[in-house]
Amino acid sequence: MKYSRQRELILNTVIRLKGHPTADMVYRALRDELPNISLGTVYRNLRLLSEMGILRRISLPDGADRFDARVDGHDHMVCTRCGRIFDISLDILSGLEQSVTDQTGFQVASHSLVMEGLCKDCQINIQKERGI
Amino acid sequence: MKYSRQRELILNTVIRLKGHPTADMVYRALRDELPNISLGTVYRNLRLLSEMGILRRISLPDGADRFDARVDGHDHMVCTRCGRIFDISLDILSGLEQSVTDQTGFQVASHSLVMEGLCKDCQINIQKERGI
DNA sequence: CTCTGTGCAAAACTTTTGCATAGCC
DNA sequence: GGCTATGCAAAAGTTTTGCACAGAG
Image (tube, rainbow over all chains, first blue to last red):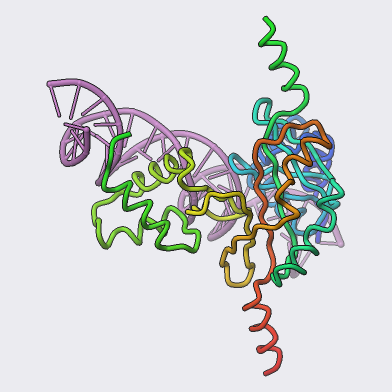
């Protein structure tokens, strides 16, 4: 694969933004340093980097896909109030794929687990609002 | 909510088709008995029935959403070779949401777990093809 | 020089929505 | 009759793709 400044900056932007950005978020963040970059290029490279295992694509039940610079085995929690996405790596889930393979005969290669609910901050904020 | 023949048939079709159909599959299956039904109506009612808890919407990493007539707590496995979707309800997963809530403080309300891999049939077929 | 990647725009695909009309109660 | 649901078509949102040109090796 040939080097391109665009691809380098797209990767750096996902790393820099941290909060599991969408393609469009990456695109908008990049326009400061690369005003002519196209959304198509962002999509193309995010797809490429994900296929190479350098990034990870996260599909959420609704809205655009997210991209994660952390590619080790972990899952995600989405706060339904503030929209933030949190990483989670739990012991219970570490052997999950193997367990399912053993118990069902279906040969699991990968999985995607997304939990929805309320993050700690939002739980506290809801408490505060109720106290008013 | 008012009765409608369309909604009744849409629900029946999801139940009848079994294999976790997409909105478009339901639409096409329905056109035999209801030639004038519109795709919009199918989408509207699948959404409505899912929000009422009568159906369950399954978001897969790619492609259109699926609809499941089984609404109890269970998860899904998608075969990457034949595309079929299998239900799975495992003991390990039954207390999952509570475990995560207890261990992280993130209050989990629901989750979506999709495993990708090879179903038994496809594993066998691959073996056979190799044997030729 | 060659071949891959880019920018731009159009297209593909999924899902929602506005509006006039049909149909349930 | 009143109000909800439908059909149709347009729109919205996300992602991919065709093509001519730019840029890396």
